[in-house]
Amino acid sequence: MLKVKHKMYKKMLVFDGNHLAYRNFHTLRSLTNPKGLGIGCVFGVIGSIKKAIREYPEHRIVFCWDTRPKVRKELYPEYKAHRGEKPEWFAQLMWQIEQLKDGLRHLNVDQYQSEGYEADDLGWYMSSVRCEEYPDGETVLVTSDSDWLQLVDDDLNVRLYDPIKSKKYTNKEVCSKIGIQKPRELAMFKAITGDKSDNVPKIPRFPTKLALELSHHCPTPNRLDHYIGSADPNPPIKMSDKWKQSLKDNMDMIQLNFKLVYLGFLEPKKIEYTKGQDDVQMLKAFYKKHGFKSYLGEMAKQELIRGVRPGG
Image (cartoon, rainbow, N blue to C red):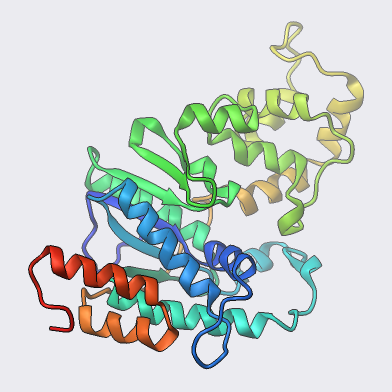
């Protein structure tokens, strides 16, 4: 596994930057800064950070960012192709994300990205490296993107926190939500049933219940291929010849889908790292620039509690 020259932390909050930025951008579209520019994305994500810190005060915050999904498009040119041309508001979202990245540097937040890869891949990387270096530590993935649910692992102390719903996920919650028996089975389930949001194709009309059963007994395409080719007279899953043939006909697609959706299959080759700093004065200036009066008020209260004169 690739190693980056940075300090890994025993307890971490790993944020899915782009997904949370997108959600807050649309939720807080009407919020503007003193210059009349939209700033809801920045305000909302910082609010999510504050919310997560209250839940996990001992954890180091890191952010993972998407770049163009070049690696997945090389595997499957139609990946996310259905999204078409960028909408008019996309440039405004990108501007707000750049503002957010600047603010995070002063909030003591470390940031990561890897050209050609997505935040999902970095979320897998961060949790995997932490598990190697600190087996008794904890990683909390902060996102409302269901793709990340497959990374949840009670044995490795990897959880997920959805800041939009204020909901925590362990193995039990993930399995209950999807209908699987282990979080990692989610990848195989999506390899069969597809993922509309990313334009990952599916086997037409394939029964959801059967896909869930297969994902448990055959969590990889190789296991599935072996299973449907087996002559076992008493298979653990009863399946009609129709659906068995459908799996055989679509095995190439299932194998490709699995590569697209299984987090950890595509390992980042080079990671860009920006270290955060705890810079109170720069953070104040950032809040003032964008008119974040409530966050400035919180800082003033904290300074009073610590016995520091406001503005000092």
